Image 1: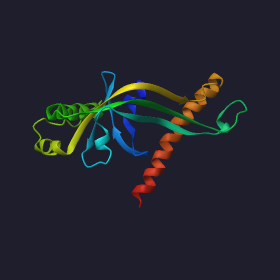
Image 2: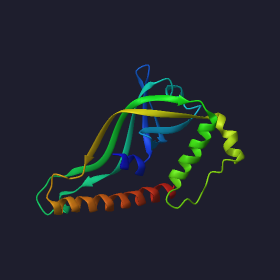
Image 3: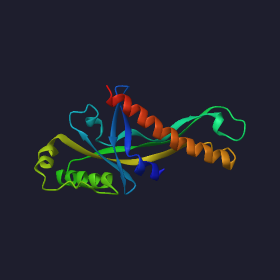
Image 4: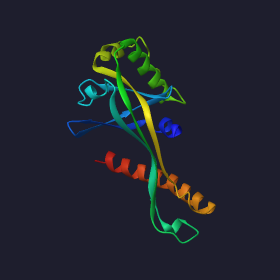
Length: 183
């Protein structure tokens, strides 16, 4: 599950206020058995990411429809996916020096492995924007992995499903992006 968090760090962050869910998509970095993130102070969810509030976080990996046609044995259609659901307690971190270092560290993590960009601690834009960003950390209280990967099949069918997951994700990403950029 940790590998999923590190490979797909864009999380769906869910809080509840007045029985209404507030949902934001943010990259979260897993470090020291906690999740660390940053949010714009104008985001309605920002106020809920403090004070030891309960929070739910969902990370999603690759997913796709699996046609019975890819198997060597008779099967029914299915959907394969990787998801990780976390529950925890969130608290705000007020220290602007810690925020600045966290933004630098997150950039370094997200730039891996090629590190083509380094967020310079002396970047004036970074300093100017610190007042608009809040840092928070989530202490994880519950982990739940949802891995449906045709693992109940024979080895050749498991491998066929694995290959289909790779193929379908590459094709669907390309088709989606082609349609969006043609608009």
